[in-house]
Amino acid sequence: MPVVTYISADGAINEVEVASGNSVMQGAVDNMIDGIVAECGGSCSCATCHCYVDDAWKDKVPAASEMEKDMLECVLEPQEGSRLSCQINMTDDLDGLVVRLPESQF
Image 1 (cartoon, rainbow, N blue to C red):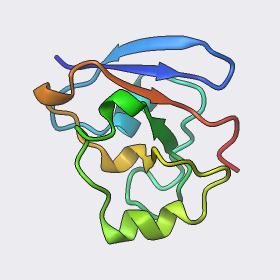
Image 2 (image 1 turned 60 degrees about the vertical axis):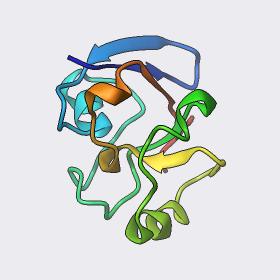
Image 3 (image 1 turned 135 degrees about the vertical axis):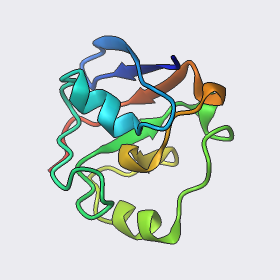
Image 4 (image 1 turned 90 degrees about the vertical axis):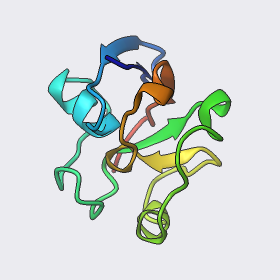
């Protein structure tokens, strides 16, 4: 099963197996990773699953849709690697993905 490394704003590191086809958000929720709120449950309508894709992975993660780009305009402290974790579905190619979590989702 592919592994995602979640790095919280305080530097805590959690490595979690996330089944192929599940979102990075679902992996965080299922494993009680602090920093991913996921109020809308993954429907790309709240932006409370904001994360920063590590530089080494930016070109490997599929591009954001227009709807996701619109939602990213609502996040606090957007950066170049900002993504909604509900929109990144795990595949074997993403095994080892590293995402950083913002200090706050609100």
